[in-house]
Image 1 (cartoon, helix red, strand yellow):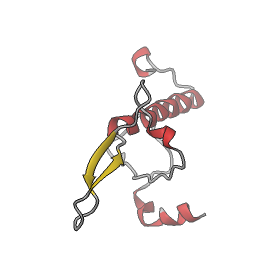
Image 2 (cartoon, rainbow, N blue to C red; image 1 turned 60 degrees about the vertical axis):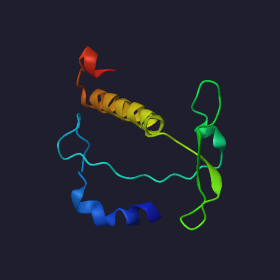
Image 3 (cartoon, one colour; image 1 turned 90 degrees about the horizontal axis):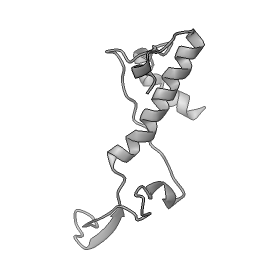
Length: 103
C-alpha cells in the first residue's frame, strides 16, 4: 500500500502499541484529505460557508473567494475519535476509566 511506504521515513519514531493515555513521546502526523463535497465545510448551524477574500496569487492581486476550514472545526472530530479510541483501548485492556476520563 502506498501510504504504508510513505511512513517508512518516520518508522523509527512510531510506537508498536498505543498507550492508554498520551505520553510525552506522542507525535502528531499531518493528514492530507481530499474531499469531493462542500458539505464538509458547512460548519455553522445556519449552513453558510466560511469564506475569505484573498489575492489570486503573489503576482496577481485580483480578489478571489476561498473556503476556510478553521482549525477548531478540523480538530473537533479528530479529538472525538481519539477519545473513542482511548475508551475502546481501555475496555479491551479491562481498565476501568474514572468518570472524568470518560468524557
